[in-house]
Image (cartoon, rainbow, N blue to C red; front, top):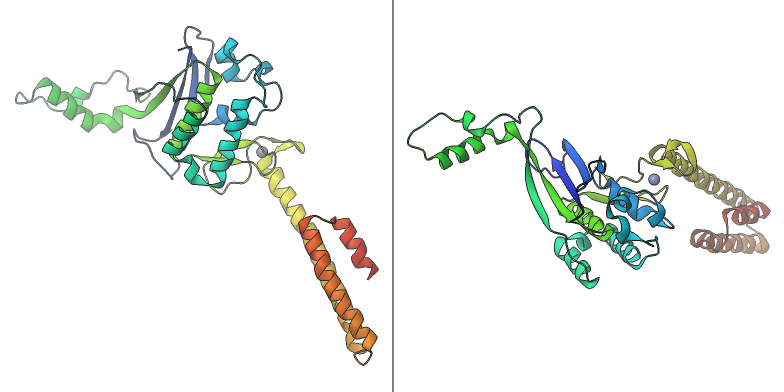
Length: 299
Ligand SMILES: [Zn+2]
């Protein structure tokens, strides 16, 4: 083992699902190298890693720093990463792919396996010198073990925190597998940002944007910029709808005034049929919005 990846989520010594936990963190520690000891938000290193493009081996991503020589030549097109991203995309679309057994099957299909894993109880900050035996009265009828166990049950929420899940890793593949295993077995929401298209972890399953700097505006985040850009697109779409409505009204009024004329009748029917076809083409992307508006103006 050359480095460990540890994770925890929960509060008051217990794992919690759904609600807002006190801890959502991960740690990467390189054994025999105290300088490499990185703490991040849960799933942050993994989602950054699989979102990277180009020559990943040359980046200073924590996984690359930790795995050292074993990741020479790894790029965003490397077979493992391409397969992994496709699996994550499938899971985002269809949560059943993120069931643990399904994940194990994916690993097996790639000739990979889950790195060795263990749990560690973590004492709460400032409680490190306490002993569980202090939490139960001395009673000669109890064996030392029973007293200790009863003491633990009485004291656990006060002195212990959510256990750390630690995976022993050698390679970047191990770090990715460890991260993804923890994330899916703890029902974390793995999502893809609709603004920058990078992966991220969100508290809400319906989140759309990540907290990274927006690629379209470096002064703000995807969360703010993405929502504004979507709003702008919507108001543009509304402009088109409005123009269609006005044009339809004008055409109808003309037809109404000339309802005795066979030509006016035919023209109106033609216009409605062509409009329908043009709207389908616009929706499918066969024509651009500009082409559509130009056509509408000519009517
Ligand atoms: Zn984003």
